[in-house]
Length: 209
Image (cartoon, rainbow, N blue to C red; front, side, top):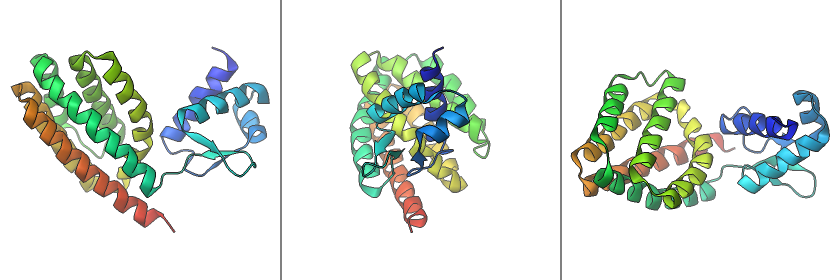
């Protein structure tokens, strides 16, 4: 793997997991020292992160991790509502019930305080929906949105009650998909996303000085 790819994967992971928090400076010299590579591959990695919307320039003074504000979170959820409701509806029409039954069994017993296990279950749910939808254009759009959702989802770690509630909401969506009820799958998705957005905005209110 090229040095620029290593730098990109490392920095992207740290941004999505909030190791590098929104607004954190991304200085080439510091990052090249930290990653043990020259500044050129770091510069290439940062350019990819800017193109992906995970980093942005700030007043000609270098780059920072893209902030999470009320406005951009709300805008992202507006797009998420449209995409995920359609995906859930199509998944209910085109699904393999066995795949979602296995997911339901796993999610029904998961301990939401085990964050790696919980987020892995969410990724498995997303992958199952993508496979059921079988629409590469919709899946590509969802993949782009999920890149930014990864950061936003991490904010809910501060609210264990919300994670437990979200797990129950995912179960309702899965049950609707298994039943082949497209309208119910879309409605359950809408409820989940509405509650998720409210929780995230509340979290941002607490974190914003």
